[in-house]
Image 1 (cartoon, rainbow, N blue to C red):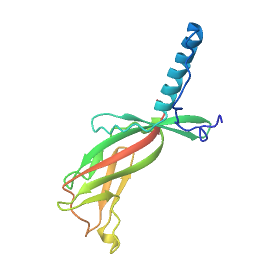
Image 2: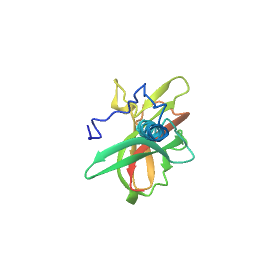
Image 3: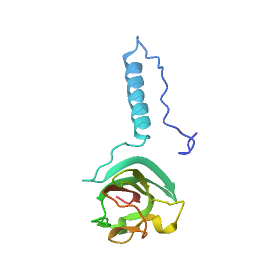
Image 4: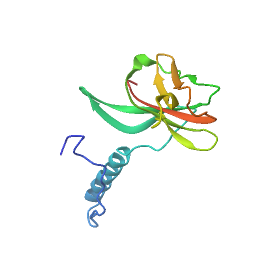
Length: 156
């Protein structure tokens, strides 16, 4: 199983370490460390930061190379629906996720916000070359506070 899609971050639970040969023990400990590091690095990193970009731990095999995703979080509210993202789009090869949530004073809602009663109640999110643009329909709920999360493939 050499394909990245076939390997999973499973770490075996037992390992027999030799007790009578220091060289073999050293080799087993070295291999054990490599196995642990590879499996730990194959998981998604649960760090979300407004102040800095974070490597997500995800690896995407798109095209001929494997790339990692970067995550950046942004605050927004009704007073700031256009948010400068500060990203260098020439180094971004693709966005993998654009999502978020917001509080309307009563309820927490997902972003984008989809209304089942009227398209005029919806809130969308888009990214252009300089900004995150949140667009609200005429009947959309107010946003007292919210977060937008951008995750993207980057050549770094």
